[in-house]
Length: 194
Ligand code: 5GP
Image 1 (spheres, helix red, strand yellow):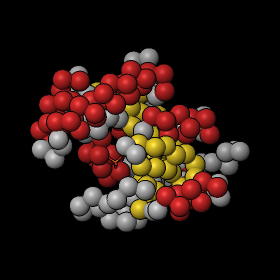
Image 2 (image 1 turned 60 degrees about the horizontal axis):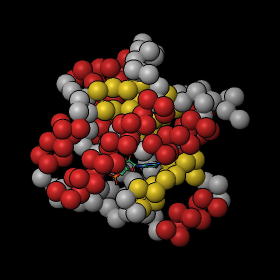
Image 3 (image 1 turned 180 degrees about the vertical axis):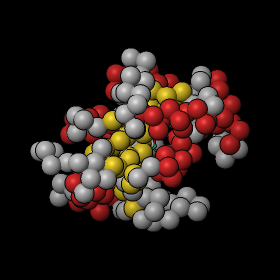
Image 4 (image 1 turned 90 degrees about the vertical axis):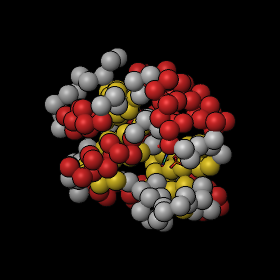
């Protein structure tokens, strides 16, 4: 099915608050890699732009895209639907350019099934205590929401060694970015602690 694919499909996952967006921005800045803009049924947050951060769609539109087989993977998260559109990925890979997806664990598993050669990278916090400190420190998250995200994070971290090729601890940001870049460049394919 993917015999003509030339670019590398990369998944970057990690719990809320781990610093994934910062790492992702640095990777996109320093490599010739395209970001796949996901579709979601959640509402835009302050500053988010339709078509840039997400394609903001209705539940009906999302379900129609699934029925039309336009969705490569999808999952429900926090009561909303999130999915990767095939046309954000397939033509780009076929033109020889790498594509990065920022998706959660269920989606990562579906990507693995569809693209066995995809490179799946999980960003983990140094500890759950540290993640809790970072989430509280953001100031935009209520204590109840922090607890909910921490419990999701705990199960994501537990599952990560069974899903991902590499697990990168984000303790020092610059080191984590360098490590992800090494993995993408094929210089650190043994980076997992499986
Ligand atoms: P947020 O609402 O904070 O932007 O994203 C919530 C979660 O949904 C994050 O873990 C993010 O990685 C995940 N996510 C974003 N887009 C997709 C997608 O297309 N598919 C899947 N499976 N997860 C996604």
